[in-house]
Length: 49
Image (tube, rainbow, N blue to C red; front, side, top):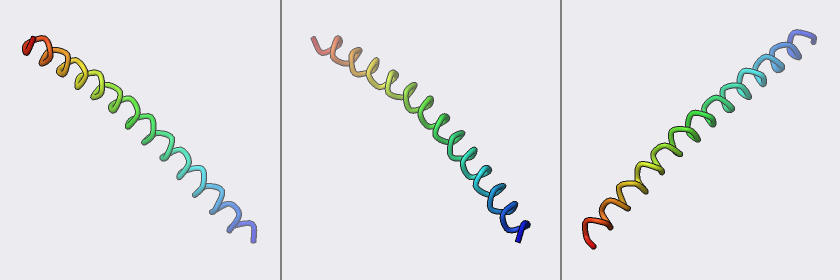
C-alpha cells in the first residue's frame, strides 16, 4: 500500500512542476509576443497618419 502512495505523490509532484513550468514559459513568451504585436500596430498606425 505504501508504494501506491509513493507513486501517486511522485506523479502529482512531476505533473504540478511540469504544469508550473509550461505555464511560466507560455506566460513569458505570450507577454513578449503581445508587446511585439502592439509595437507593430503602433508603427502601422503612425505610417497611416
